[in-house]
Length: 490
Image 1 (cartoon, rainbow, N blue to C red):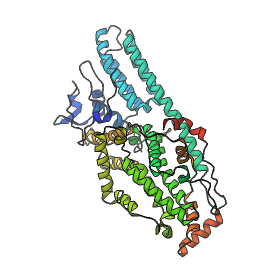
Image 2: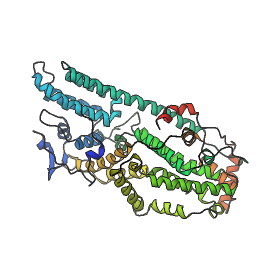
Image 3: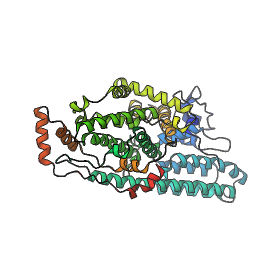
Image 4: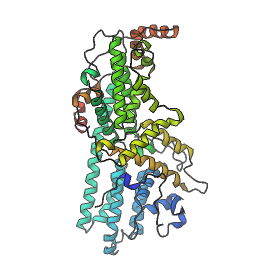
C-alpha cells in the first residue's frame, strides 16, 4: 500500500500551490480553474473531485487542502458519509452483479484515499459515525479479495494505535494541567534557602536548550493539522449560524502547546525571582540568556520566545539593580531577533533561513525548525479573517485554502523531525513538573528582592502581603511516575 507523502513533497516552497490539475470527468461545471489551477468550486463539486475513479486520483495536495479546509463547511463525519455514497453509488459497489474486475481496479484507489485521510487526520476518526461509515465502505472493498482485506486491516490497526497513543497523551496532559493549576503558589515571605533550582538540576545551558527541544518536538507530534482550522471556527456558515463544533474541544492539543509556552515563560520568571541574593539572580538571568541563544542556534524559536517573554515580565524587568550587573549584549541581540516591529520581520527572516537549512540538511540536528506557535496561529487567523470563505456565486474560495494549507503543511513537516539529542529524564522531569509562581507571587518575590520604587508599587506590595497565606512548596507539581510514559518518548 503506498503511504501518504511527506509534506515537503506535497507542497513546493514558492507559495500558493502551482501543481496542474486534470479536471475529473463531469466535474468541470462545478469547479473553476485559471491557468490550470483550481481556484473555486461548489462544495458538492469539490467533494466529487475528492473521490477517485478507475482512471482518476486527486492530486495529494488537493486531498490535504480539502480535508483540512472542508470542516469550515461540513462536519468530517458528514463528508465521510458523502464520500462513501459517491464511492458506493457511482462506482456501483452496492451492486452484487457489478463487474468484479472494476471493483479490483477501484479498491486500491479508494483505500489510498482512506490511508491518506487516516494518516494525516486521524483525530477525525474518534467519531463513531466516521468509523461506522469507513467500516461499511472497507467491508465492500475487502469482500472476496484477500489482498484488499489485508490492506483494510492495516489501515484500521494503524489508526487504532494512533488514537490510543493520542488518548494516553491527552489524559496525562489533562492531569498535569489540573494539578499545576492547583499548585500556583503565593509567597508570604521569601525562603531563606532554596533546595533546588534549574541550575542545580542542569548547569549546562546548552543541555537545557536541547531538553526544551525534546519537549517541543514531542508536543508538536500530537497536534493535528486540522486543529489550526478548528481553533478558528466559531460558527458554521452553512448551518444557520449554529455551533459547528459543540461539545468536545477540537483543538485541545494545540491549546496544550500554547499552555506549555506560558508555563515555560512563568518558570523562567520564577527561577529569576526566587533567589534571595542579587548575585544568584544575575547568574540565573545570564544562564537563561545562554539557553535562549542556544535555542536560537538549534532553530527552537518557540522556547526562545518563551524565555524572552519570561525575562520581560514586569516582576523580572523591574529588577534594575540586578540587571545592572548582567552582561546584556547577547540578550540585546536575541531581543533584536524577536523584535515584534514590522510584523516580526527579523524573526520571520530567521525562520526562513532555518526552514531553508532544514530543506538541505543532512542530519536531524540541522532539520529542526520549531516556529513561534502563537504567531503562526495569528497568521492563520488573519488569513482566515482577511479573505471570504465563500465567493458571491456561492463557490468555496479554494485559492484562500491553498495558502492556508501551505502554512499548515510547513508546520506539519517540521513536526515530523526526530529530536537528535539524548534525553535526560531528570532535567525533563524538572521542566515539566517544577512549581511556578502566579503573577502575584512573582511580584511579591520581586518586591522582596528589590523594594518598591513608587507609591503604586508600595500599595501593591502591601496588598499582596496581606492576602498571601501560602508559603511555596518546592515539591513537584506531579510525580515522575505520571510522566514516565511520555518521558520515554520525549
